[in-house]
Amino acid sequence: MIAHRVRTHSSREGLPREGQLAWKIAQVAADPVPVVREVAEMIGNRVVDNAAVAVAALARAPVANARAQALAHPYTPGSAVFGEGPRVRVSPEWAAWANGVAVRELDFHDTFLAADYSHPGDNIPSILAVAQHRGLDGRALVRGIATGYEIQVDLVRGICLHEHRIDHIAHLGPSAAAGIGTLLDLAPEVIYQAVGQALHTTTATRQSRKGEISSWKAYAPAFAGKAAVEAVDRAMRGEGAPSPIWEGEDGVIARLLGGPEARYEVPLPESGEAKRAILDTYTKEHSAEYQSQALIDLARRMAPEIGDLSRVDSILIHTSHHTHNVIGTGANDPQKTDPDASRETLDHSIMYIFAVALEDRDWHHERSYTSERAHRPSTVSLWHKIRTTEDPEWTRRYHDPDPDERAFGGRVEVRLDDGTVIVDEIAVADAHPRGARPFGRAEYIAKFRALAEGVIETAEQDRFLELACRIETLDAEEVRMLNLAAPAGALTGATGEGLFR
Image 1 (cartoon, helix red, strand yellow):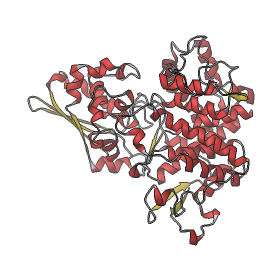
Image 2 (cartoon, rainbow, N blue to C red; image 1 turned 30 degrees about the vertical axis):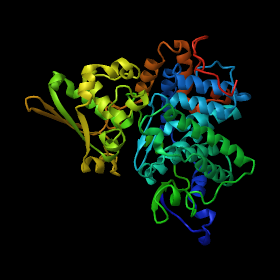
Image 3 (cartoon, rainbow, N blue to C red; image 1 turned 90 degrees about the vertical axis):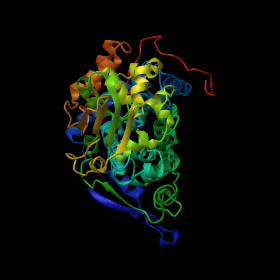
Image 4 (cartoon, rainbow, N blue to C red; image 1 turned 135 degrees about the vertical axis):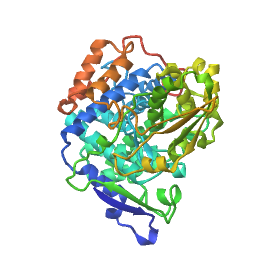
């Protein structure tokens, strides 16, 4: 890996294209390096994982509305839409949109946390949609997805967006554009312009994940994927992007991030180096914000020792800066302790999540978020006894460059009404590669089967899994069939009438 130093340059300096981060990303994307076996296998796992969480969300209103928008844009050859039959094809940017919303809606797929946050599986819907539309095979698809993961993970390692309240899709637009560039075997010049356009059109504030969180939380990554497809289309036609997009004196660093004096280092593979970043990412066992995954597992472990939860006087969670300030009491969001809050908000409240996991000793993507569940008096009482605090040691471990030391959990102190204090801690989720029960191919398939049950017929599940588990060997027609169809009449329609029909 090469650490590229990135900073603002004045217009008078005339930063050459070869010195710009967007150009270096384009060179990585255009590098014809083969995909190593373990990366290709993990890509297959993540295609299965995306499909699992997407089918579980098919009946939810945001997904139904995004699907209705996509279906209003039929196209030949086009791309598939989750839940629809094999003959249904829409324009690829709209397939990226609909499928991206389905994948993101339950907050239940893969994650990478470093200087910033990301869900790199969000790259897959747009890259797959373009592969289906252009009739490309599994080898090309795997190469494109490997690039999408690599670029997003490397940007997340080097550039913190959250510090400046910029949403993490600002890393997704460029990574998806780069992945599509690899997929299509485009020249670096074209990828460079597409990356710049995608970044320019996907910078937004983090208000989508603050306060009263709405369905836009699921729509935002899909918007970035759709924008990436459109950016590639324009770049292929010869249209350019603002330049230098990161480093310009009115560019992203100067005006949206650390300012003219800021310095960043973004690691990227050198020429001929395999793109392995997907192997550093991890999926979720539970449908909740990733920084709650380990704490859900800890709550389930602590519950028997605590016993009667009505005796709990207070719970203090010592955790990292990110966890405390994003999903903890450090966010200062009253909505995070409000039983009437949206599902999206409860998903970002570790106080709610820890209380429910203690009571139920379980977590479910639907039952754990119902209005009845959030309003249960015992839950509300316990929920309001929980607070978080930043612990410098957990913050250090969150950012530790050593993957064996990096941690996303915390230490929990439960004080009972007689003064007894019960303490336990957890570094990583059970499903993490270093956890108690790491996810492998069998666990991805089990998650898929559990979420697809009652939604997708068994024969259709089998057909999809057979394709996804040998993704690198698929021919173009098989890539086009890499989709799941719900039984006839099973899908819900849009909740209202919009512009597109």
